[in-house]
Amino acid sequence: MLLAACALAGCAAVPAPPPGVVSGRLSLQVDAADDRPAQALSAAFDLRGDAERGELRLSTPLGTTLALASWAPGEARLVTPQGERRYADLGMLSRQVFGEDLPLRALPDWLQGRPWPGAGAAARPLPSGPGFEQLGWTVELARFDRGQLTAWRTAPPGVRLRAQLDSAP
Image (cartoon, rainbow, N blue to C red; front, side, top):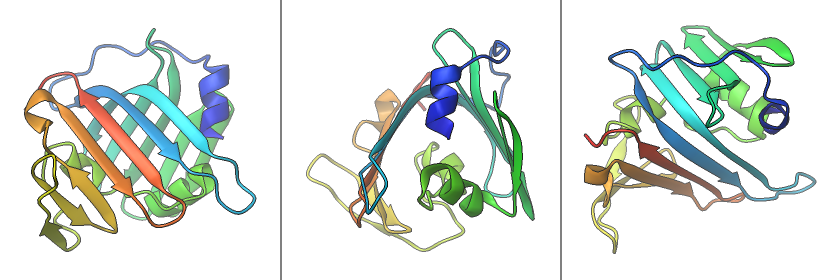
């Protein structure tokens, strides 16, 4: 559904992100599984907040909003050009949109180059450099000083997330 939103992108332009917002570009690839085809998404993003309360805006390079996800305790909301939908939490939103439970609650911390404090994590040195494992994902920080983060899950279906931050930490 979010991929359809990317194709139909037709909402308002996104203003420059305010202070306290992590922004950049991200790409997400979800391998095919069972009767679901592979999915891919590439978008600019603005993320504000943390695991408890926040907002993630995805937009085209020209600033057209593709989707806006917001969350607070006990609810998550997704607004796309097709309308608004509400969910009990970010996990439910992720499962409905991508067919997978993506670690959206951990994403604000990961984009700061650190494990999310809400779940156990283990340092994992990778051939490319430092990283950690959390929630069944491997997070690579080898190029984090240049604003690049890569996270992947190998359990079927495989999922890969790449982020390029607008400014290096």
